[in-house]
Each structure stands twice: as C-alpha cells, then as structure tokens.
Image 1 (cartoon, rainbow, N blue to C red):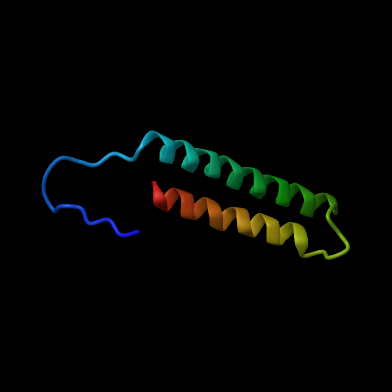
Image 2 (cartoon, rainbow, N blue to C red):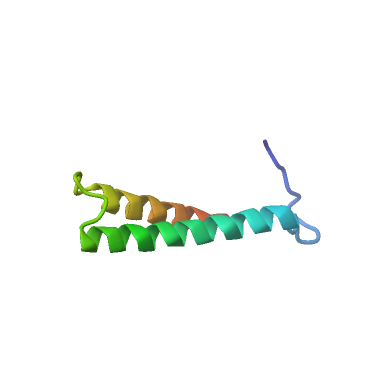
Length: 70
C-alpha cells in the first residue's frame, strides 16, 4: 500500500484501530524483552542457551520498529 501525503496542509492522524494495534504490539514487544531476559537469566527455555536471548533480541527489534512507526 502506498500513501502519498501533501507537503502542506493539516496534519494527518492515524485511524483509532491502527493506534490500538500499534499499542498492543508495543506491549507485546516489551513483554518479549522482559520474558526473554528473565528466561535467559534464570536458565529457562534451555537446552539451546541462545533461545531466551533470541527472544529478547526479537522483542527489542520489534520495540524499536514500533517506536519508529509512531
């Protein structure tokens, strides 16, 4: 989908549903960072020792993407 906005004129606001989806995604991303970090520090989600840290890294990337999309 391509959106072309005019260079001048009134500001554009996102639809309420899109705002709700971004907020939910932001909360999920924060939960992934916390859960991955806690699981990594306590040794859960092992045998692969990298799994909790990969979960935390994915959550951090998702968090950065969500903040950039706002």
